Image 1 (cartoon, rainbow, N blue to C red):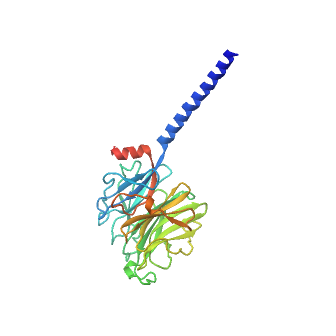
Image 2: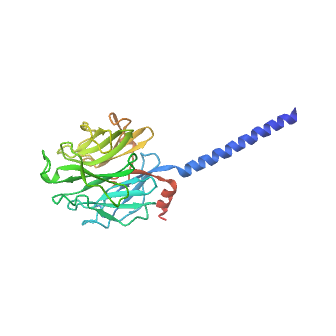
Image 3: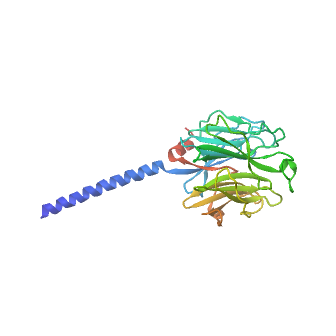
Length: 317
């Protein structure tokens, strides 16, 4: 009986050892493959290029040292509002504002590791609109249904739309193009006309055939963030909501953290970055006291990176 009990105990210990070994390996593998959050940014006066910050929890952000891409295109040689998304093959695609005023396009570049970038390209999406005043805050979205990228931006074309209280050269509407390869693009089309000056739009896929457009109502004097709902990333979108934020807010971006979405925005009226949490884009909770961002952080977007990519970014290797 004693020998039998010993054999049973040895068998149990062997099983426990195997399970522990497997668990340690699984935890180690999971940690190695853990996805972290990455926030793109720029610093005024926008001549230094792309800045990056990372976070493990989506709330607390640590800035990476220096610029990761210097602007080389556009008349002003600036990089504002860098918007980035990760394609199905792991390639990062980024677009940005190249000029505060003037110009008829935006900048584009791609990278596998966020350090070595493709040649910068100028995409003249408004070349057929000779009176266009600007091309602001291009935002890139990957449509996983049609397997294509949608790029939206704000432009003013004087006397094209009723101006309301805005000046003709500050009466923006949203436009878009689509592409599968960033070599050929669809014709430019009107994306969103809510009946007022609108900029800084962000497309969010909330669920199957459930999309949210987060937008800045750029109408004086309030200028705040709203949302609108649609069944397609190309709309049409329903009437926009009541304001979600304080006046003088802009540059929204959205990230899914756990079961909720975090909506970040720049409340430039108070010179503070703030955030709202929501599960449905109808009910919001202020969580600004829970977030921290690098000093000087300005309008960008959030994507994910692996711990390996982050390590190389920190070491700049």
